[in-house]
Structures are given as C-alpha cells and as structure tokens.
Image 1 (spheres, rainbow, N blue to C red):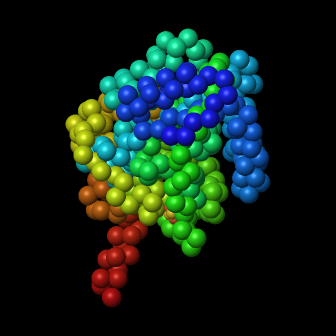
Image 2 (image 1 turned 60 degrees about the horizontal axis):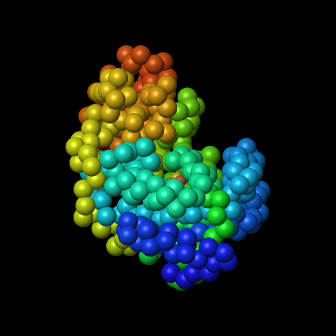
Image 3 (image 1 turned 90 degrees about the vertical axis):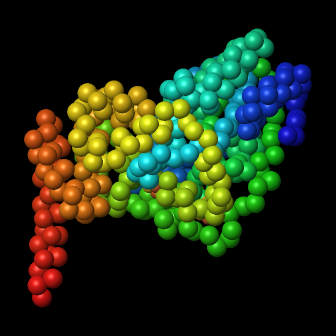
Length: 360
Ligand code: SF4
Ligand code: SF4
C-alpha cells in the first residue's frame, strides 16, 4: 500500500496494520472532499435514464458526509472478498452476495472482522459513524477514490479478487489519508461489452450506465405489488432474488470465485431455496427462515417470494411447475392468486401450442 498522510501518520499506520492483522483484503482512507465529483457523475447518470431524478436523486446525500456528520474529517473504507465461499444448491436463483450477506449476520466471519475493526477504531480514540445498511456514503466511489480497486463498465468495484467484494465505510473525526494501489488493475478491454449484452432487462445499457429501476436485483426485492410486468418477469428468467449476470460474464471475474470455504449455515439453507419449496412454505416459515437473511423483501411483503417463485417456474416452463403454481390459486394474498392465474394461463397456452404443433 502507498501511504500519504498530512497529520496522523502513526494513526494511519495502526489502522493499516490492524486491517492486515484481521486479514481484511483492502483498507483505504480518504478525506470527505475526495467524494466531491461523485455528485457530478451521479447527475450525469440521472440525465441518461428516464425519471433519473426520482431513481437516483436520493443518492446525492452521499456526496458529502459532512452534511450528516459535520465533525467528519475522513472516511475509512475496507473491502472484504467473498468469492471463497462454496455455493449451495439452488444458488443460481440468487445473487451470490445475498447468499453470504454479512450485514445482519453475527455468525458471518466478515461481520466479525468488521466488528473487530470498528472496535479498534474506537480503541484508538476515534469518533466514528457507520451504517450497516445503506452505508454512510457511496461505497464503490469511496473505495475507488481510496485506491481499493477499479469501477468497471458494469459499475461494480473490482479488486484483484474480482467484483466479489463487499465494502464497508466509517466516517471518522481524524484527518487521515491512505490511498491503496488498486488502480493498478488492468482496465476493461477496449472492445468488451459483455456485461451490457448479458443484462436480461437492459438495465445496464451503456458503459457505467445502469437504470436501477429496471435492474433485476431491485425488481426482485422491491416489496412492491407492481414491481414488474409480465414481459419484465419473462426477462428475469429463473432469478428469485438478485442477479449476477453482468458480473458472471465478465472476463475480469474469470477464475475469481474459488468457493473452497463453507459459509455458516448456507449449505443447510440451500435445499430450501428452490422455487418449488418457496411455494410450499407457509408465510410464517418464510419469515422465520428467509426474511432475516434476505432482508430486502420486507416482512409485510413476503408474498414477493411467492411472486418471484411463480415467475421462475412459469419461465422454466416445466410441466411439474403447473401443479405447484395451481396451489397458489388459494393463497391468502390476492396478488399471488392473480399472478398464479396469469402464469397458469400462459403455461397452459404454451402446452396447447406445443400439442397443436405436435399434431401438425
Ligand atoms: S444485476 Fe442483472 S439486471 Fe442488474 S444491471 Fe446487472 S445484469 Fe442487469
Ligand atoms: S464484461 Fe467487459 S466491459 Fe463489462 S466490466 Fe467486465 S471487462 Fe468491463
């Protein structure tokens, strides 16, 4: 790591050493004003998507943490990789980050490291502020500014371990700066647009330009009755919660998911994550088993799980799915009954077409 620091060299060294001792992949520190161009980039993006102000305007609050924390003099940001975890059965229906999400999981090794690091900042006498979710600043931009890695055309921050990294940041009251060497990573190849072509909903439609409102990761977790229409549902394919398409196809992620370690409880959970099982789970069980881990779907909107599972089975088109979906015609939520009816109409129409074609 390179180090530049005006007035707190020993403090910076201690923080850097602690990060290394905790086996934190990357640690950097920036001054709050280093985020000043974030607002410009965000406004550029807002101008390129429909309804941009409504979709992204709220993120402008991340441009200057001193509005919320007037005492803040630096932002400490760390990156923890998670590509070393083994994926369970049915993982393909889920964004991988959500399967090993450490944010509200005290058993997660990453959460333990984050807690230990935060405690250390306190032991150093620093005043700090952080937010497990949604964070105190624009994490990827802060990490990029701190030299932890490179933001690629799919908008994800990459370190040497690919884009499979989670980011955490703290505001502190000490003037410090520690710029890491992540910008030494090779850039995206000139002619590469694989991530854009892979996006199922065309949410990522140009380099660095994604419309969050149509991203599967958002649509599948929005907890809104009209989250996605039928055509969008088709494009979502077999995704229940989240999407990794623009990361999975990226050559810069090739070989970066090593998957050699077990994440606590994930293997056991894997069998429960199939769309068939979700349709058969009572809501109380969804709340008990799934809601704590996959917290973007709100507890008062657990029917989103059923909608997404119906959508997946309808898209898969397997005859076995018809029976499962038909059982949802008696669901306690009208929106689930309606969605099940539409899916069945579609599946049965496809069956009739297939039968007619077979007769011809
Ligand atoms: S996560 Fe999926 S839907 Fe969202 S931008 Fe990437 S490929 Fe598109
Ligand atoms: S798929 Fe290609 S263009 Fe997209 S982020 Fe990866 S290297 Fe860059």
